[in-house]
Image 1: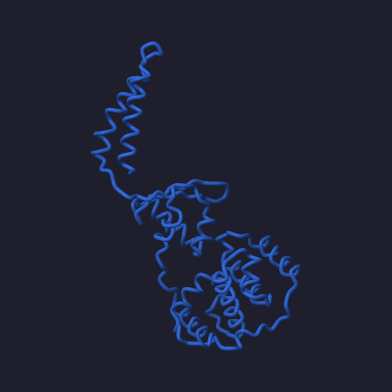
Image 2: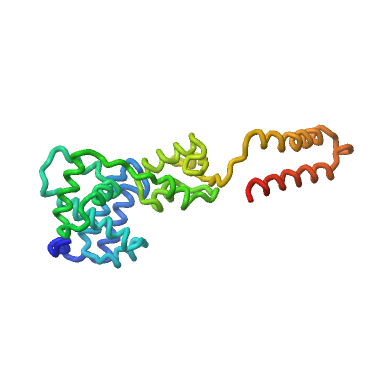
Length: 251
């Protein structure tokens, strides 16, 4: 980065001014709306850039890592760079921080002039969106615990666009075994939550049918009996057999 890119052309904000604008952003764009993702990303990046705050100060205020803040500060500088570029083919409303970062990572890392790399980013944007990275393994690694997680929680942890995450999760839901996991979805209000189970081993349908059918039939037979003839010992034995099978399949 050249020295001029560190110059901030604004006065330093007070804590009250920063918090007031930050609150306005939350109220206007929300914190996890996919539809407003690009606008939210851009507004936040511009706020970071204009604040005059250090990375450490912003990280503390946002409760994020300095690396996370640095990515958005760079995006803010890129948006400022775009204001001096007149090109009707570029639609800033569609540019998210994640999309910008994918282009940025394709530029020459040995180039120390940030604006020169911004020029390359702009050229790459005109050529079309790069192939999106696979995020399935990252999702399974962080959320393959069998617990329910909201889309917003997953998106924040993975730092990928929500639409990309939804597309990946739907593939995992439809094609079981994708990325070595199985995904389930449930509606929670106007959004969705997901839970992911790692598939460390596969049990054949033949084995399931052979081992489970006698136990199920036994439980059905006991269920048809009245209280006087039903055998609690038999039910306990069948339940114990089911537990042993579960332990065998999940060990």
